[in-house]
Image 1 (cartoon, helix red, strand yellow):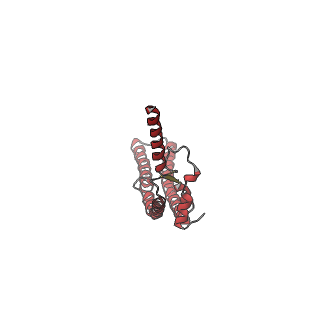
Image 2 (cartoon, rainbow, N blue to C red; image 1 turned 135 degrees about the vertical axis):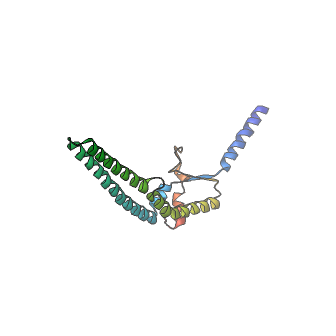
Image 3 (cartoon, rainbow, N blue to C red; image 1 turned 90 degrees about the horizontal axis):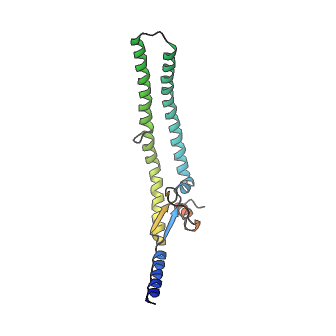
Length: 170
């Protein structure tokens, strides 16, 4: 009898403790897609990245052309052949340096993305924090970046509420 009472009290305790924790989900990708300023910034960054990519591809093509030219010329002296190979290597390195400058972890594109998108993300985080505090939520998980969320009920998704808080009502 004592075991049954003890077991029932444990089950009751854990069910109350589990229901006391409140959490919600947001879908950051969905929220960002519904903010016009984000779309505008993203389009501008994509256009700039396209220009930079074309610049890198021009240099890569120059290196390829030099290589093809070297392959066609069979009767070159060792010195001339070595000079041409060095020119090819130099062009390839120039392309890699430019690619790293624009697209690398410390490159121009990540810096521009950070500068352009950070204010938008800060507003989203502030809205999420405000809603979470008002609703007494203890945890808000981003569905878009949480790889371990296998299923979540749409009833706990507060993405539309965040958009409404930001002035983009759905």
